[in-house]
Length: 318
Image 1 (cartoon, rainbow, N blue to C red):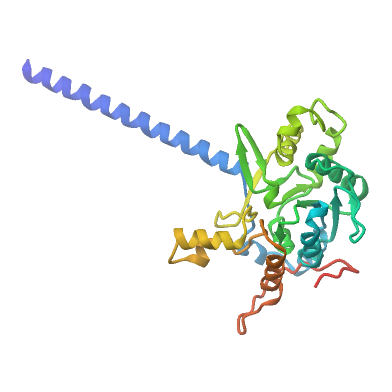
Image 2 (cartoon, rainbow, N blue to C red; image 1 turned 90 degrees about the vertical axis):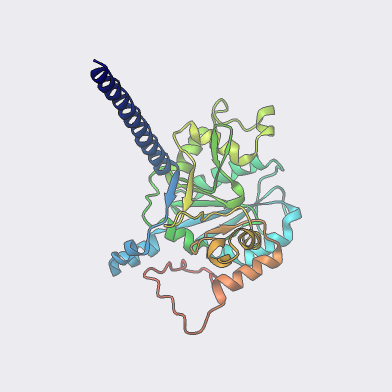
């Protein structure tokens, strides 16, 4: 009897352990599934080089012409030196770039928004862009004058993405339950997204332009709130290795951080090879970036990219 009881208890114990293990494994599998789904929902990656190699020459030509990016740069008179630096550097690589200022500035051509409120400036700039250029451009990139952008890398990132779908891309951040694209790294809206936003601008209950709460919320967060009403959600842009391509810091800061965190891999550990933006730059740093990105070449190193994005006719793109 003792032997049978002992065997019974051992069987119960082993069975219980087995059930617990299966339950734990089940939870792990379910959690992993949820995590993967979340990653697919909020993170978008650039195409890898193997994808571009499969594109035919005819498709190369067609693609290089099909990406039409309109750049919106929000400025204020105090930014006049940065304004000049952006105009002379990366803005030339947009298919069209326009500056939207808080007031009229004689020395520079700009669209006068007649307000110092950054949210009102952003709203008016998006409405202006949609009303005037909806038939000419399919992607809309908005930035501050402290941002340096590599537009060719942006076009490469958008290579497999359809502007008739509601894309809202950049460097995502969270504020409570709200996920938004930080304006510091630049904001990209597809034609479909700016179309949906435009439909909301006249509905103050869903997308208010004034009010106490609006004044307390930054313009990039307010944009995310409005876009949520029309089913457009923030998505973080990454390269094929999972590194951010829209950056809210300067290269210098990333290098300093890499020297601390990855002392044996400072360059590799710093940033993505296909980075699209860096932020927090001074005027001098704008020109340094322009030289490093577009002019400096290492003799003997030839980069044969399979796809070339050609400047538009009449562009002063250098």
